[in-house]
Length: 162
Image (cartoon, rainbow, N blue to C red):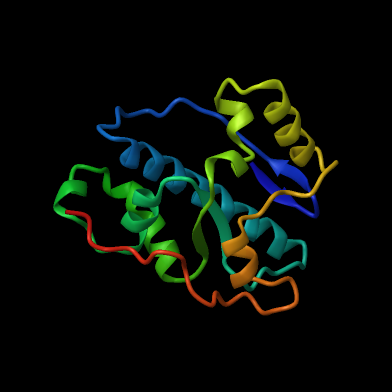
């Protein structure tokens, strides 16, 4: 779910075309597809005269996926289709920024999971722009609303996946 000015502007939910052998791989494939849409939306905004200089944050609740997007190809990731590794390039050139987000704050979950009523309503209200999104504290401290979009640091740096 992509939010702009307090409301959802784009969303999709699809079954992946390939079989993932781990949750990290499944999340990595999804994050790569989300980065494709983010790049398309950045171009649309640019065409409308609203150039986005800071990286587009993608909130990810799988730390292994984020680490895989920041580190060189690991022996365990060599089976992942090369087209999916465009996510790593977008993270390297600061077009996309993957950020750890707790699962309870993942506002796209109501499109892919069966949630309790209260959680569903909370996520739905964020998508409709009725309530502001709950951003992780670590994100707000690194990206204060008044500061330029340069992260101070990321929580828990990534180590090579062994």
